Length: 281
Image 1: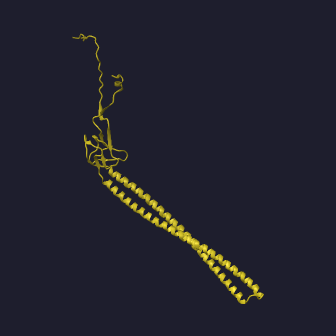
Image 2 (image 1 turned 135 degrees about the vertical axis):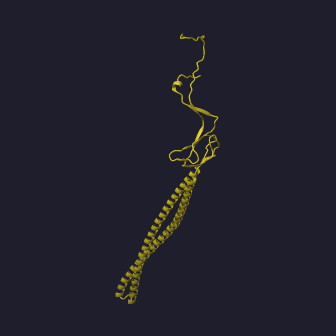
Image 3 (image 1 turned 30 degrees about the vertical axis):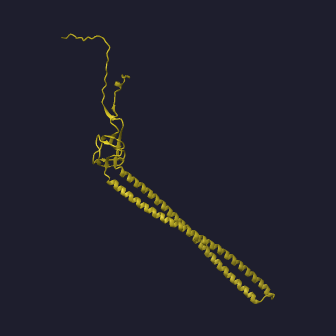
């Protein structure tokens, strides 16, 4: 019983088959991960595993309460900013008209000053003429060529010319003071107009910022409805109703949709020791 036993066979050609067994996952060739750009609580689910979906179809919705409140607040802030910008622009327009009026007043005051300067020059010429006349009259009176009444008339005329010169000088001083006041008023009006313009620009910028915030709020509200980006089949669902998803630092994956289950592939890891001996065919 302990003797060896032999199996004999004739020598011939045959095939030696080597089989390698590995474990892997069958996955679609083309699949899309669907996430959410905003954080919130899952309010409804419209699809499940193996659901056939179409592009734009609603997959799930987030609780829209906070998004609707933010949208209402942003739109109210936008309306307030638009009203402020409109009021600032309306106040800037009259200030421009005030500048034109101040310019006209300043020009009129300068014209009055120029006229006063001319009046002073004329009065000075009259005084010089009447003073020269008196000097001639004194010489002629001493020689008996004119009467005393002529001398008195010319003296009175000189006194009147001196009074006119004083009046013209006073008028010139008043005209210059008015010109200075008109110029100061114009400068103040220009500064007020610049301030109104700056306020209008700031109000416009605030309105644009409020518009951006309103657009962001409306965008977040629209993203509370999660839709399918492609036509396909739901192969994975990672959330349930009532679950909170946070999209603060990364986009969480809610669904995985395969465009088609006709094209599949197997994802396996094969040992290098098994791969080495293999050759084509």
